[in-house]
Image 1 (tube, rainbow, N blue to C red):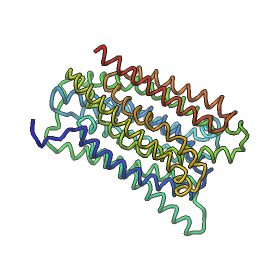
Image 2: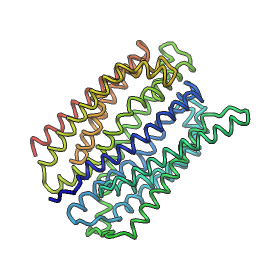
Image 3: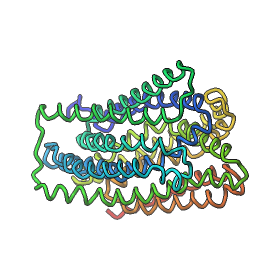
Image 4: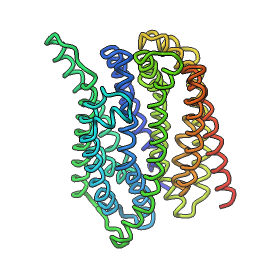
Length: 440
């Protein structure tokens, strides 16, 4: 073994983590800027778009990115020659779906806003958001290829470009509107999101184009039909699973403001509380997740490759190290948020309520960070179906708290539900991984 050889998981994690941290730092201050520019209610309205964005991504891109990454990793391990064919196959399916999804969101925006999101003010935002769907599909498929060959630098760079252009666009447009003596609307944030996706897509396309002229753009020995079969064989269950999960999450997101109104809040207060939770407190809690997300993205192809080669010892070692370090990170963050959560809410967001949420949500950190990487390990071992069942169970637990606890205890009831579901999810994931490794 060469002394200078770098482990792909370590190097890839380092690259993605540094980029992710930079991106999250930018995004963190961006959230503070948005919260002060548009207020708590505006943030609540903006966060109502999350279900539509998540559902469209699940339908058009997420499953294909994962399938491309896994297939490229497995074939590269056996043939030592990465190929563009899996990426092109996935993209040829993903793109038509993304254009169809774009059309549905654009032309039915009024219906989606009024009947599904229960907030008519989101309609013009949905029409802008629709154009980001095809852009996201392109760069997701390209990222899947680069993750499969363990080249994390280009996806990381495109992520950073997306964040910088998004923030820059929103700041520039808002400054222009303010200079004219007018007040910018929250629609500006959606324009920035779409612009960021556009530049990220440009970076991805240029990157893959440049790779065509570099060494060993290989050729997979499997026929095209077999490639499509393999891509669809993994992508369709993943897509179906994510759609079901996102539908349940959409019900959850839309129901929280409604149940807060049942608790006694008016519409403005309910949206404000929802905006503080999802637009201020949760992003800060997810901030350290840049590290675990980086590990998770690169664990999937690494675990897939080790499992395809029959190297179960490497799978076990990767799993144990991941569990240990994610637990340590989670405990450290839990203590940090417990001690400084109220200060962060008051100083950073100017919201005592955000401080309360941050302090309370700190308890989920060890479980949330662990769940992110365990899910990736189980996907690499082909356990996507079991992940789906476990996720649905945990979502129903959260929904039960939304429908039965929020009307009685307010938003505190939902915080209890998040903690309960994360603990249950960790136990289910660990049990599934233990059984798999024990019986293999």
